Image (cartoon, rainbow, N blue to C red; front, side, top):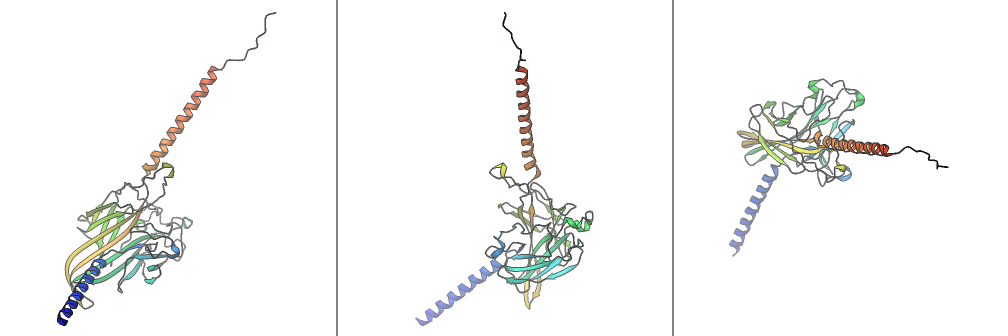
Length: 330
């Protein structure tokens, strides 16, 4: 009887351990992404958290000496943060875990316009899951601009180009995402081109998926140039047109993944396969046709009302009879 109890206990322990390992394996494969809003459950005094691809919490064209970015997802001890500045210089961010989860601060000094442009922010995390090396990259583009600095780099194509860092295992960039004044010009209905790079080189056949805050999803593969174009859905339709906000930003999360066989060693442990996952949050405005057509309708209605008023006035003027004094016969 005692032997049966011991065997049963050992069997339960083995099954529990296997289930725990499987759960850890599934959880470790989840992607990371960056936001200026803390993850849900870590809001504190910063307001409500956002889901994947959530809107950024700081106005891009309101300069600040420093800005804090939060990592959505758990990190291993090997995680590192990198900050690629608009002038091409590189700084390493300090990842800290506090009441709002994992975060790092971006120093944007000096606030004199010399760093006008696009910052590339990266968090790279490596870990082993069984015989697979998992590499997760969270990337974000940040603009810290003030119109008071002028627009010295308005026609500088290097400053307007989406940044990329040749030491990043897997990252996503875009083409033509900003106008000459560093305003994001992506709108619903547009068909932006996205590129996937690995160590600075284009990746053919990478899986590229898109998910908006409203739940729309799309998946494609990159071509020989490592590029893919997807038309963004129009998903902003308020119940009343009087509530339409032409500046409302939709949230998009772009995710790239790549899996390939490659043996190697990591912290003294062997792996036979590499899995890479990279994310880039983005945002887009309502299509201009959505609200210009509404404005055109209002203009036509106004013109019709004006024309009707003029017609009524003219008709009434024509119907008026001149005043004549009539004297009775004597």
